[in-house]
Every structure is written in C-alpha cells, then in structure tokens.
Length: 317
Ligand code: XMP
Image (cartoon, rainbow, N blue to C red):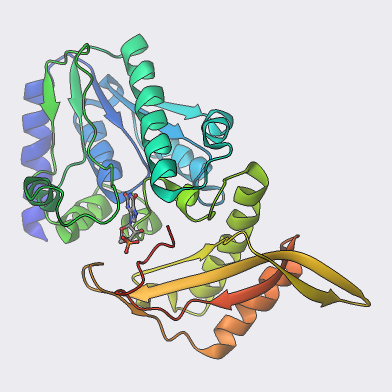
C-alpha cells in the first residue's frame, strides 16, 4: 500500500520534469489501465493533458456518459469525446464474420483516433496505459492468440511526438487498481471487468445494427443491476449478455410472438486462458430472465450459457 503512495509521488514528480510545459495526449478507453494513467497524468500536469475518448457506440448502456462525467468532474484535464456510432455502424453494415468485424472496428478506431490527434495534438508527448504484463505478452508473438486483440496502439509514421510515456509500465494489475483508488477514481471503474476492445460489436452476433446494440445494452444493464443487487457480481470474473440474432417463437397474453433471444454468459477464472461457467443460483437467473423479457422490447426468450473454456471462449465471437 505505502509503496503505491511513494510510487504516485515519485511518478508525478518524474512526469512533471519530463513533460515540462509541453502537451501530452492519451487515448482513453474507459478501461482500468488507461483511466489510471489518465488520473496520474492529470495529477502531474493538469490541463496540459488531453484525453481522447472514442465512443464508437458499442459500449455498455450509459458507459460513455459515465466516462465523460468521471473525467470532466473529478479530474483536471482537457477531455475530448468523439461520438461516432453512425460511422462505425455504416462500416459494419452487411458484415457478419467475427474477425472481419474486429478488423473493421480496429481500423476505424485507428483512423478516428489518429485523425483527431493529427489535427489537434500532433506534438508534445503521447501517453499509454501499458502495464507490465502487456510488455511480456507482446514479446511472446502471435502464436498463442486465437482472436485478434488490439489493446496496443501504434503511432502512425507521420506523427512525431517528443516521446512515449508509459507511467504504469512496471506495475501489475492489482497495483494499478490500488493506484487508481488512491487517485480517487470511482470504485466501479477501478474494479471493472475486462471489456473487449470491439465492445458490443462482438456481442451482437453477426451483423451489427443500432437496434440490436440498443436491445443488447438494455438486457445487459438489467443483468448487471440484478447481479450487483444480490452481491453476486463481485464473485464473477466476467458476465454479460449476448444477442445471438436468433428469433424464436413465444407466447404473450393471447398472441404468438416471434422475437429475439438473449443469452447470458458468466464465468469465473484466474487468467482467462481457461474459465468455468459460473454456477449462478437459479432464483437470480430467473429474476434476470423475467426482467429482461418484461422490460426489453423485442426479447421473448433468455438462455444461460453453460460452456466452460475450453472448448468455448468467453466471448461468443
Ligand atoms: P476469449 O473470448 O478469447 O476472451 O475467451 C478472453 C478475454 O479476452 C477478452 N477479449 C478481448 N479483449 N479485444 C480485447 O481487448 C478483443 O478483441 C477481445 N476478445 C476477447 C474477453 O472479454 C475475455 O475477458
């Protein structure tokens, strides 16, 4: 604990000295690492820090607003939010292959993010929330990867910064969380579950549309609310809703329905390389199911995924 206090003090001093009166720009995803890096840099250089937050409209319900509120209200910095759901969805139109979707989302992110920086902040320093395990991972090569991940951002050749700043590069995840708590980040952000870069883009199975994203956001919000209420959330490594894009027949009152299916995924794991499906009590699952069907329009059936990893992956795509 005290080591993290002295880590904060010495890092803030180092950052001040290194950055001087220059600017520094950071890509903020709303995940733990980039958020803690942002908080640390804010403490060191305040308004000299610009955080660019690309909201591709594929985040959980209200998440973009939560990130904006957190960083505009609690921290001193220049916060830039780019809302670009329409752009992303138009690029994803007609595309249903999972890897093709990942690639499109990754490329689109890269373009939107770097175009913004090129226009406005293409000098000074570039900061990243790289942590120690990321450096080990990226040294290993791609052999172990089953899905393409794109956490690490590559700087385009035509942008030349004074240097790259990675203030968390020697920390492990649990240390990063301690630093985040100490810097006053909200508990819910510091203890956040992993969330894939492509976001709900890989949880809406097949073609992604605005309507489907909306349905999934609503269902997922209910799941999270119920899991938080019963205290089960903290026992899970990760849980979320999936929209498989399958329609099934149901009955509502006197009439037959033909509507969307929602799947619930919840796992426990130490490292995400293997994972067990979580044995959530039936009464909780029951409550989640009836609330989703009653409250989310166009959903008439909920199923629970009882597949461990392997053979299943955590995500469905
Ligand atoms: P899988 O589905 O491969 O997921 O068992 C393992 C962990 O990685 C997350 N995940 C991703 N994270 N970009 C990311 O940044 C991705 O494309 C991606 N795909 C999966 C997943 O949420 C789980 O925590």
